[in-house]
Length: 247
Image (cartoon, rainbow, N blue to C red; front, side, top):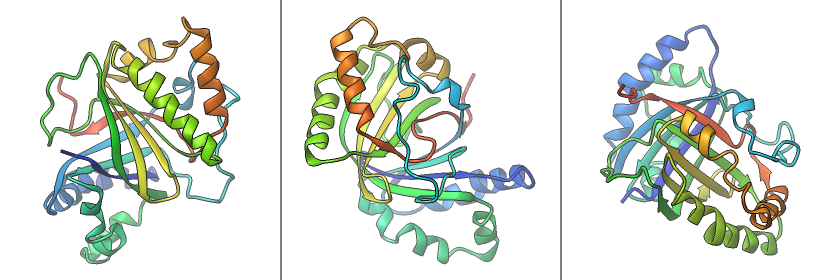
């Protein structure tokens, strides 16, 4: 099983971007995949923000204050492992420190980099799931939220909302492949939610208004969402750039 995730958000300058991406996919990713217990890798480019907002969501999302955590969010690099501690032995910082100078110089191109190591505690499969192998990369389209809640009562309600409403909805949503609830081992955000879709277009068609037929549950979603504090750019909607999407 792939219950551990190492997630990195960052930006890149325009100059040298193609060289960086070639290095990342051709040299860096294979080095991480060679580590014991690492099962897969996937790299994404984020969509523009106007395509992320759900029905009724504009204005209710709160984000962490500027400067509290790095704000990069245009690229998202994910690795899946057997468990979260796969990425703590060594830690990302220790692993990077031992890389050759050329690799470290490439890593230095990242702007506003932040990372979380997370563990998956709940998963549902959507209608488009099929039977993915453990080492299969994530789906062509993802939505990734990373955030903190407030009091322990707020966290109880968040857990109940996911268990009783959001996750069961995703089991029936067309275009949905998989959804994973995540809890943090390290990093600013305590909570994560990773939605996988057959494409960004499928997400936009089916996910955006999926609650509109149930006003009571839509109101519950509104109450829960307003209590969360998101990382910069969260939730991120993104399309996979590596491995390439087969057409």
